[in-house]
Image (cartoon, rainbow, N blue to C red; front, side, top):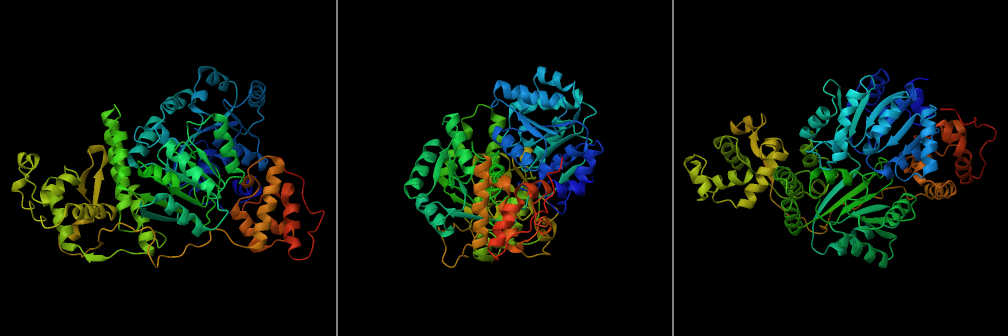
Length: 609
């Protein structure tokens, strides 16, 4: 079977996404890879398909138990022999999984890093055929990563212990320093890099000034209508419980989730959300890293995230099925003060410095007056050729002005101070500060000293952030966030280009005339009937509804209205195993809308994978 046939017959997809085929073929040949793809971009297929084409068992390193279970449920639904091995298994279940591993009956085994790297488990692996290692959420291995986990550090030993086994590292959130650190720590210096980009065009990004947060949340939810599943992130456990309680009192199917709850209660909340029995989970960042739920329609940040990576990853839990989704951030400067205090309470000064830089970048994103998506992607080094048209800034643009002269002054000042200082010092020089540091460095004698004293510091800060967002300046994280000129600044400095920027603006709760929200999923009787059928099947089999079929597949069914098994196979996400398992029930439901009945006797037996 070719990889294209595996993609279609097992997983139900007609074509590979960018880079997937190259990664898959490289791993099958025995090569390594570093993969950066956005959440929902198809990272899992990059190692799952090679696992089906190589001899032996693939070991997948996963940080969260919930993620392992969801992945295994989905693979099993597609007829793939997969299992997980973690602390949730009882003694008999553990023995059964290990027996399957030694008997060569598993194509994929998901395991936590601390369990994989024990001496006893590594010794066990020497007696079996390992087809490949896949390190998921690989940013956890890096001190520059936003979710650094010490237990991941041991994974660097895999290269030396299993030199002939292919290794693939995958992540959705990594800036340039984190990428280099991942590659170094996992011994992947000779491996090809595949960077598929960070853009999630189906997500609408909105930042709103936090005024009356719960009232703003209620307004947002009422505008969306009923039924859409979503996540609300809050900073503290106390706030999580308060918001969840108030939402429940208002009639929403909502529950809290945070690390202070008993394990059983957390599992119950997560499973209820996965099965669509809960509409909203209000959570701290303890929730969601392992969520494989593709039909989350919105993510609300009740409080400010501490870094752009977390914001990107958490908002990325919405719309993983590619259908429209929303990300709302309620931004208040009180949150910034709280976040800074938490960071500065840490004992590691170098780690504090890194986290403060990342917090400042997050504040810059929240304060942005340029296309929100361009700012977000620019943080990761990706440039859009134009504005996105699907964020609050694009849909409700701020006032613009000719900033050419101010920009030239700012760029000149960055150059005159030697490209060795951060935003605060550059603003001090521009505004003619009499502070001791400016005088000691002799920067009060520069030609740019005081040339912007008539402009408020806040306006200079906005302008410098826009110059960073648009690529005229860059901030060097490894060197105390100093500002440096890029090649794009040259024509502006030489007077060969004019620059139009946006005036600083704090967004109101909901501007008059702002674009009306579109329904995320079709309000179609057939779609709703198919969703209800999916829920009944999922409850019957004890799995989350998306394991049966995702919203994207149901949307495609409602649009195509297939009448035969062959037509149903044309729906994205329908493979032969699921056709044999669920096909008749879905065709019968579709036929009921046309007054007919599906043809019988046309379903092949479940294929062996």
